[in-house]
Image 1 (cartoon, rainbow, N blue to C red):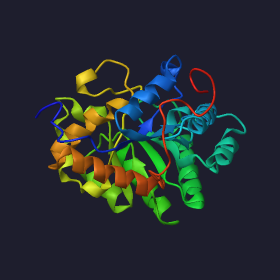
Image 2: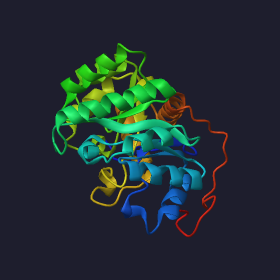
Image 3: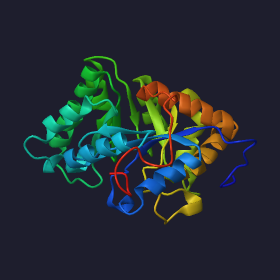
Image 4: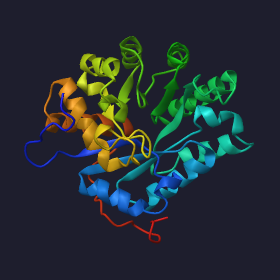
Length: 285
């Protein structure tokens, strides 16, 4: 399998469904990073909050740069650190016009920075907010697949689910259960790593209309740039490998996954985008 399968003609637009543009790693050149993504045909970026402060920053970035939208939430590893009023901040931000998703939320037994009952409480809060606002939720799951499915099924008993398993690294069984519950499966740079045999096998078995692609930048840079700071422009490298695994050409993969992202997040491609920020200073915020 090649790292960079060939593309015929101009590359079709792509959407990076999960980035962390608020991270300090982008403070020196955020506008340039977004500009490179747009120049590479990455027409939309969803920047994801992980705390109340991070979510506020994500909303500010989305308001500054056309083509960028925000998700707001408290990531499970930060759930125990949430202060009084933080959840109310998330609820307030979630109603904003540039917010397209709730999260990231979920469960994490790998780091175990927060008591598991606290993680579960916040997970269910995020899903309930998603259901109330009719905006999808973004799931972080690490070493907690069975528990995540239990909580998703509990939430599904209250009403339909709309969401995405971000940076998926789980089993095919878990992926199929999530799809059956109404979720999408998103893959990041790890799927490009040569030893990710099990994860690549999952991609081959999933319906294309349930696959999304992301960077999780500045983390998890794909194989050709592994070890460097990741950024949204690199999502095309991951998409190339995913297309090959899915058995379609890169253009078709880009068209389908872009349509998937627009459907899930309620995005339109009509808004014009520009390399320069809409407002603000050198970094656009």
